[in-house]
Length: 368
Image 1 (tube, rainbow, N blue to C red):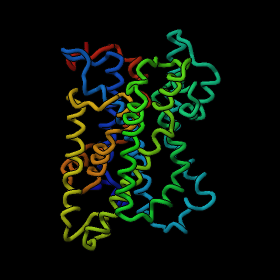
Image 2 (cartoon, rainbow, N blue to C red):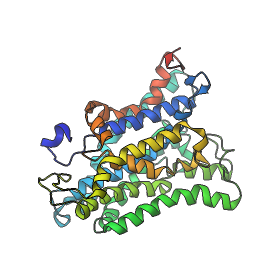
Image 3 (cartoon, helix red, strand yellow):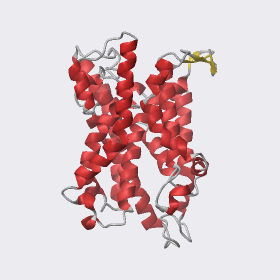
Image 4 (cartoon, one colour):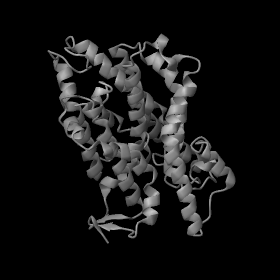
């Protein structure tokens, strides 16, 4: 189940690689669809309109994976270098060395393409802001930067900075407290994107915003909600809580493990048996229905789904693919690991590929 890395780390979850690849691919197809590049006989493809909903899912995934690594760390908290005074610097350095090189290559290639095509580059101050990955914090720069879709990397800076204190709070929570906080996190997008706007009298208050414009307060608020890290912190925390839930379910409902692996049990409680086998199918099925049937689209879906109103279903999908007996997890584990490794590069370099691709549209899934 844990594939090749089991020998190095028994807690490595190999199925997450292909889950990342699927999410990244849906995002890429969503952006291509928005550009008018994916067409069927009726026009654009409805399912691809929801590609952007997977971007916050990567915040959830990051929170889950980082918490999972800490939970099963070989060193106790008091001995772990991460929790020492110098640990944050080392932690941030490791994260940035993983993401920044590909991001930098993407920005440079994007700039070169604009110059070759005689297109105007962003202002110097915008380029400086994004070189420090601060574009999502400065709203007048966010939609004017090169590689705008890499805004999520800017958000990760805040989440990594807050991870240590958040983990210290979460690590001692019991099952009921974890479930209550998960429910609270799921309520936030409903309140922010549906209940509050409805109470103020305009559910789709963002509809007049044009990309790149910052002239009105509606423009600024729309950019804030779409891109600012504060608006997605609940999704990152949800991922952390999901990892803690997995650990608590093991402790609450499982018999004594028969090996060192966290999922290996001799007898399973029915709650754990359902969790191991049903979460991913239910999550992905629910998402498939919403993505393919306009009749069930969420209210104000361009903002509500961005703020993760679909978080319960995406959380089920993520939780399920970490389970040994989940049928979707088994399929994902059988996929080549290289797909998971390539998902980040696929996401970062997608618009450069769009510019270089000789055809502008895919009609009926055939290159036109």
